[in-house]
Image 1 (cartoon, helix red, strand yellow):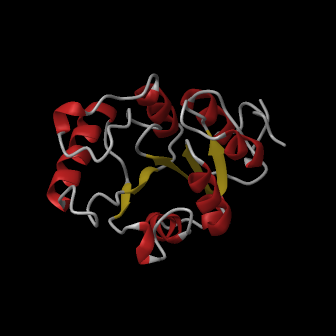
Image 2: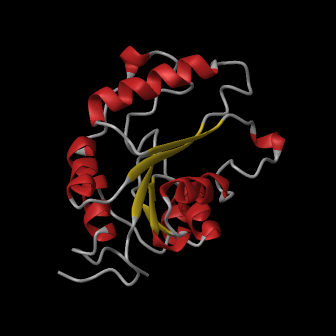
Amino acid sequence: MTEPAVPVHAVLFDRDDTLIVDVPYNGDPEAVRPMPSARAAVDRVRAAGIPVGVISNQSGIARGLLSEEQVRRVNERIEQLLGPFDVWRICPHAPRDACDCRKPRPGMIVSAAAELGVAAENVVMIGDIGADVDAAEAAGARGILVPTRLTLQQERDDATTVAETIAEAVEIALGSRSGADR
């Protein structure tokens, strides 16, 4: 096993298409389906004694397609299926709002790290699109891309670290695999 270059004190996950199957603007807890091996991957981080969190853009709130209550109920369902998370950060803004929290900006990662009492450089962010890894980089954290069918080739090419599955991403984050570092 290799040790990570920087100690990992928290692992943050993107929500849609990383932890759960993306249902666009989902406000229905019954529509929540975990991604393959998501529960085992998150449990692996928990077993290592490392806090876990969720970082998610939810522009459906600003667009009037979802209420904050609907997002809260979906997130509760995620915790029923995947276990508790130590921190949640949701950006309710639309892209036009130019807020500091919407990925690829670093606000949610920096805020989550502060709540957990860890330095951002000791955080790993795992997600399925370039905005996830770009937010990590902007925060000074490490990003790991887990591509899905919707991930653009350019996002794959630009990512420093790419894993084929969430389980592999967790092993890379914990330092037991090297991954496809570029």
